[in-house]
Image (cartoon, rainbow, N blue to C red; front, side, top):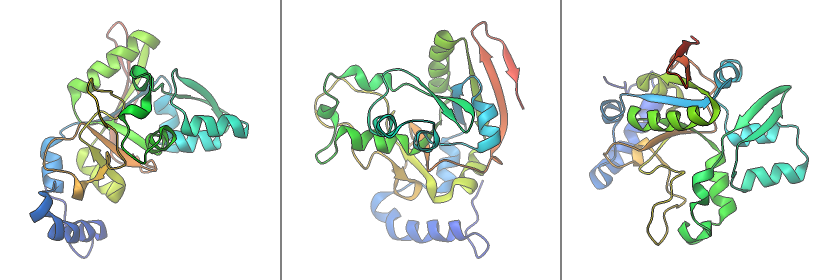
Amino acid sequence: MEIPIGPDNDWGISLGRNFAGTCAILQAMTPEQFLSRCKVVCHVGPVGAWDQIARHGFRTAEQLILEADLNEGERQGLLSTPRRESVRLRVQGEDVILRDQGPLFARKDLRSILDNGLDVGDWIRLLNQRVYFFTDQTTMQKFMDKYVQIDGAQDVIWLSPLKVLEAAGLGLELTSQNTGAIIRRSGPQKTADTFAPLWRFPDRKPAEATILGGLDDLSPVFRAERCFRDGRRQLLI
């Protein structure tokens, strides 16, 4: 497949200019390489996630927190503090669940894995500003199985990689590491450059794809299903 770069595709023009200036130095990934490496793009959420996405699009944790019925202290705490457990919010009359960030608590001092100049609040804000997508079905399955065992069921939303490229444009960012994981080694693991746009990402398969600021356009979605602990799958669309 090929992403058109021409007068009718402003995003393609922008990417083309960036590639022209950076590929020789950074060997950055092209749209075609992204499509060849990421055959799967999917999002996993708690039960009911698809119903809310169908009505409002893919919203970031930050967007939900800002719209939720919270006092200012609670709001600021959620925006800048890691979530040890899932948090239930009331947003525009609907119950919404923010996934926990439990893996971040693998270190007693989260600051020990952050790059210089990045504090815990900065890192959590970076995480909260994005929606996350799996680019590998095996990794997605492990994650889903974990939360199915905890909660009984999960909603899985499948998207066309090509249409994600077209819909997200320059909001699409890639990362070479699982942003929630803490590796057993010393030194910085999380930096402000953890997330990179396609034209700056090295030519290798990403661990995750994210969309900065969320995504209102649902045209990339081609299937949504609810997966249960007993192995049943209920087709939602």
